[in-house]
Image (cartoon, rainbow, N blue to C red):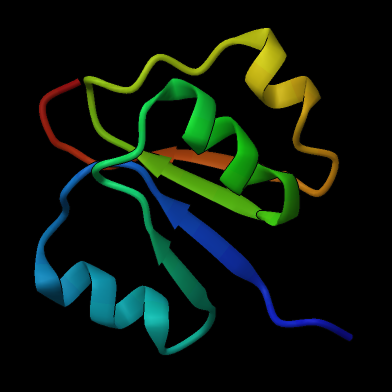
Length: 76
């Protein structure tokens, strides 16, 4: 079985990254444009975004292993 891979598309607190890294391989993609992010999601099990990342149907369709998209933040 391969390790769980989480793509983090936007900056989150170091404590959050450390927590994720304790359970999964973390791919920090904060500088990736939409096309690069879509490529990186091909092998991802999860995606973490905040407010700026626009996740669309094409991105999801290109990510066969993707099981969850989480939005980090408060107040929503």
